Length: 215
Length: 421
Image (tube, rainbow over all chains, first blue to last red; front, side):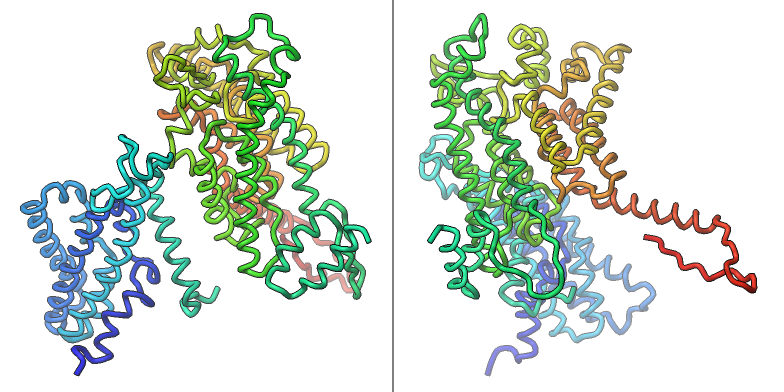
């Protein structure tokens, strides 16, 4: 027997491709632009969002029947804020440099529209297990794009991956740099992320034409 | 059988095939197709998009030739010292200058056209439409607006980026929001700033020689001013050198004189909009005057880092740097500029105004024409929108105030059909 029923598996698989929060729903773009200059930061951000969304969706799903709908947005914000503070403190304790790099953007997970969106659209109307899967799935879909963007931006912009030089040393002129290659400074600045995300959207939609909206 | 008939025959063979667009591009570039329409009357004019593009290229050729000679002249002068009594034939139009210029500038042209047209062909074949002519002018503009020693692979990367992201993603020629040549320039500027600014890139060979005993440098006039070295600049270059273009700079942008001639030619041929050119000149003069006034009133101390550029006489901004080139060949791009006549005035004025403003305040790089034009490219549709809206409003108001005379026998007014846009 499969680990998950087909319906449940789709909760995780859908957001990875055909219903991706970034490339299809175009949510959470802000952080995708801001922190993806380095792969490491992208991975940490992805993990943080997976944590917040997985647990957050479960908590909201648990409270969905006792929560007055008039104040549900505030309740959701409190839940996210609490989880984000946990993430922030853990990062500060165990990965101080990274938390410096991510700076305000860990805190800004609170305003990531994907999280509120899933709380509203899914967790308020579904059971705990399915909400958990949905949260993990959407956060993974977000994380996958973040890591893809981070990969290209760090590789082309700094010539490194996870801070390790892979194209040679730009100062000592070894590897690719010995034949005149240079890092692309454009990839470091946030607008480049917008273009990389745009190209990903372009590729995805030309591979699956069903995703193209009617004009 | 001449080449013409051969190509007409060949076309039938390619019809409906995947490579048809690629073949048709060559075919129609050389000859008018031999097809005739079978239904209705059609009027065809000779100046289609390809002829329009060719006219602009024609206007660019003097700048290219001058750029080739100037490359050699700047290089040899930087090594051997500038000639005391400059004579055009003796020091400028020489074989040495031409050969050195040709081997450094022509590769830029070849890479620009080769890579750019390759991308266009690939997209035409994938999408199955005709190859568009838009790249003909862009391909010529690009080598003229980059420093002479730009590595060719950088240029190739930038051209791919500019054509794909700047043009093809929007649907190709005629659909682009940003001027592709300037997109390429901006990409180079942000991606490889060390090759696009400073005092080493404007003279051929300066980058290689940096740090050796043979080091040479060629600071641009704006570069001198941005560092406050106004006296040194005037000691090295006089006004006529600035105007005729015997100064360091990007390949084809230095000669304001030839650009002026090119601009007049484009206006005469009715290719480029004189409204945009004139208003851009006025805009830059206006901003220059404002800066001059700030200096004259003593509002800015002499040690300020903006003083050099701000105190530069307002009209001289037009003859140094890329401002003239940008105004004549880039701002007038009919696709990315404003379409309405009133819009063209606003669009052009703001380009000139912002160019000089960015030039003075840009901390990293004393030039801003390409940024100003790209910015206004983005705003051009907005300007047009409000011009059209204003027009509609004015006409509606006129309609409301109009007295409608009875034209029927029983004295009732005829129903008026408002035609607004």
